[in-house]
Image 1 (cartoon, one colour):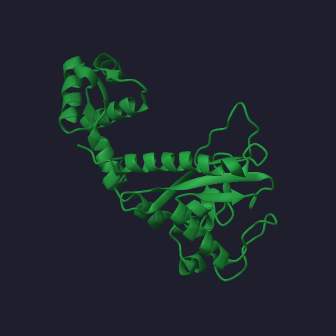
Image 2 (cartoon, one colour):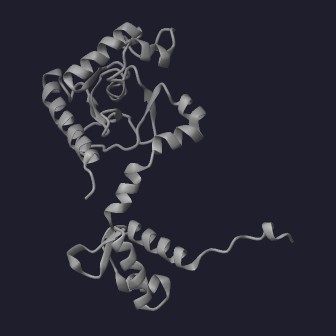
Image 3 (cartoon, helix red, strand yellow):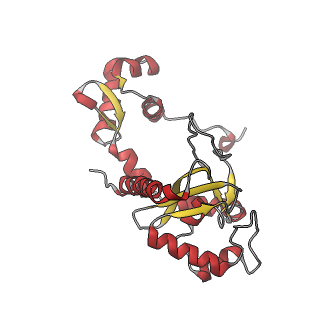
Length: 246
């Protein structure tokens, strides 16, 4: 067998460091040194030296100065500095184009005390007639909307659906002015929604957060009050995304 065909052996110390980071990342509580020692199966002093090196580089931290570990700020800094969007676009461009006219729900919380609407994590919904979608389109002008949707009429889901790009452009301008978007039974009959854009450190819209409910439970009179809460939640998340590590 040719030498190049042989599997390259792993570097033991690097493997152990990555095992430590993975164990700490998966834990909901600080991980004691003793637990890491049991995991690696080597003497505690060696584990301490590995963990202490990671601590000095900022990849681990000691809460309350005890010999237990959580992830440190360097993990967050590396993640923040890496161009995830550029990487994803470079390897998934065709898939991103397929999703280009839809909003993808990455998480949701359903009330246990109220009638809920059928929105699920992982669901794809149209951009032009949902509050979350219009929040994502907040900064789009007519030229950008035409580039995204083309020149054909938008698909109608209810009698209230926006089907013309000039109307959608006005809706986007209103989102920018108000700080939130609405859906007045535009996608689902008898469902009212409010959503607000979440922005990154460059002030670009990267996500949206919102509330959806049956119109009977969410009267128009409550819309402004709910919108304030949604807008505040989006602002809080945006502020967290803007925090620079020490």
